[in-house]
Each structure stands twice: as structure tokens, then as C-alpha cells.
Length: 264
Image (cartoon, rainbow, N blue to C red; front, side):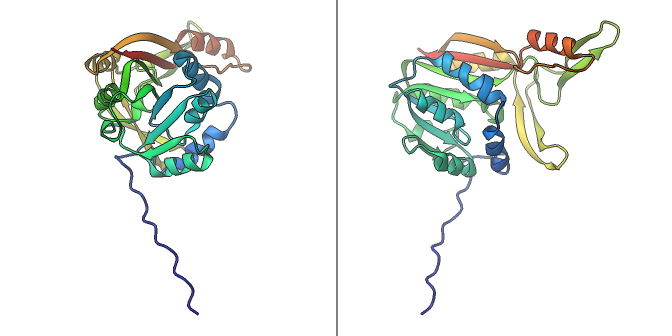
């Protein structure tokens, strides 16, 4: 007897242009490692910023492979996660739990997929800088959130961490480490190497905008900013002649920014 044919399953296309689709495996493996910024710093502080979450329904915009969605679920929230990358959503579904609903969706145009005012809160953790244009993310979040609901956006600090236009420097005369900033007011996008050494051609795209752009778009989306936190790196230098200066610089120059906005 002839062998039965395997059922053909068409490969899902990204819901939008997504530079993270080709690096989905690397990113998932990275987040699985201990001691990441996400696990040790960003996720716990974002949860604290959103409390309480138990018993509430949250939308995770740009959820990736679902790590933070799982954190919110463990805290008692009901979560829906959306991401443009089918590979990341596939990994999120495999990781479970089944209670989390995941969808391949465009973060710039998702309100049409949900009932108006159907969420008690929303988050976008380290994803807004990879979405361009970003303004419609805030517009659609305003449509699906209930009045009084919170929306937390966490990003690389736009005042100190511009892609390819900022970096650490060393002042030999003053014996201090400083942060150099080459551009701030201009909005732009830049390719970032995902595997610098081993695969320099594999890149993600990161966009910079000044703080005024984010604040103005939140206001236009019907939000009132009621939380604003700047988070320093949790890394500590213990060896080398510049260790003390490196630690002082880390404590003074925040690498991450968190904005909490309330739907009016």
C-alpha cells in the first residue's frame, strides 16, 4: 500500500516586517539563560510597576517567545500575547501554559482583532524600539484598554542608549567612565548585529526617538502618564583597574526607561 501523504501545512508569514523572525531561536535561547537583564531586572520591576495584576486581563504587545507573559500568568493575570513573528509565537505556544492565548498579529494594527475596552492592562517590554512607526501601537492600545487601565512601556533609554550613536568612553585625565551621545533629537533606525563575530550579516532593526515623541503619542492616544522610572544596569564590575569607575558610571547613567500610562 502507498504511504499516506504528509499533510501540507503552509508556513505562517510574519504579520508585519519583523527583523526578529530570523533570530527567534537565538533570542529564545538567550532568555533561557540565567542572569539576563530581562529575568533579573526588567521583568520583576515591570510587574511591580503594574501591580496588582491578579484577576485582570492583560495584553502583551510584542510578546516574543512569551517569557513575560508567563511571568504575568504566574502572578495571577489572564494574558493574551501578540507578536509579528510566527517563529516566536510558535515557541511561546510550545512553552505554555495553555491558559495564555497567543496570536500572530501586527503591533501597529491590532485593535481590530479585539473588542473595544476589553483589557484591564497592557505591556510592551523591550519591543517598542523595534516597531516602526510606533504611534499606532499607542493608538490601538488606547482602543482596547478600559478606562483607568494601565499601559507599561519598557525600552532602552532613549536619552543614553541610541543605537549606533552612543557608547561608553574613558577619560584618562579624570580617570572616569562617561557616556557619549552623538544623536538625540533626530528619529532614525539602524541595523544591530545579533551575532557579532559568528554571523555579522544577521541583524535586527532598532529605532530611536526622543522622549517627546513617546510622550506626545501617548497623550494623543488618550493616556495620562502616571509613572516614570529610569533603571540602571544590575551588572557589577569586580575586576580590573577601571572596575570602580565602571560601577560609578552604571549607577549614574540609566540604561532602561519605563513609562506607565493610564487610559483616561
